[in-house]
Length: 341
Image (cartoon, rainbow, N blue to C red; front, side, top):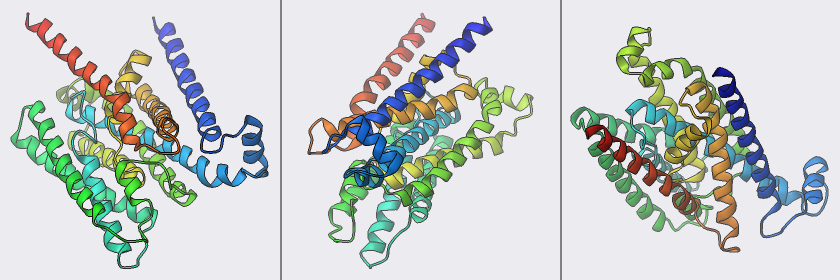
């Protein structure tokens, strides 16, 4: 029984890696200027050719950021689903992403309108503060509202309020120094530079490594808080670690890509279905690969469907991810009805 499971796990990882690689190649090839495989290879290896600058300065950092941020959002969703023991918990649904986005927009507009520049680290710090503020409100509500469905509704309302304020700020921020602010407010990987990637990559990969190191206590926590305590998991510190890691991963996405919806809900469930398990040791790296592939696909569609007009990436992730969420809710309801009968 164990051997087929290992074969399935290896095959699933290989499939995800292959899909991710193919999407990365397509992302580098396709755009306003289509490049052949030879031009891409020559541009990447030798930085030669007339289109090398397009590859190195525009497409490659954008694609790498899509992989990193998509993986971050997916892992953050898995951590929050574990924390709240709810399959539709995610940074977007609970308003955490919107809180991070609001903090970044306020700082960006406030500083840039006065002639100051904000660095990548500052954007992450602001987004993390906004994410923690929104998470704090959700946690306070969870002490009063024991019903998870109502808590989700409260999270959605918090997100809507934060999004409305953000839209107001962005709409009336008429400043020529605010580059890509409107694209960012709709959700986009455009405008991400190598400087951004150099900052976000260590943060995301470190948070991912820390989440992976928590695989064993997460597995115990999935069996119930009482069981986790019985095997020596320090519940308070463990729950704090889940909050901080999910908030940090969500903050990176909000800081550089703006709102990206449904990835944190849909991808963890798709990955669980692919691997046939919910073991964190498998699901955390699987979520990172799956989230990266999902966001690369959505970014590719956003750039090419109505070229030269570019869609907000959140519009594409919603179209692809929302049906998965509906399927999750319907299946959960059917299972509840079956148990009741």
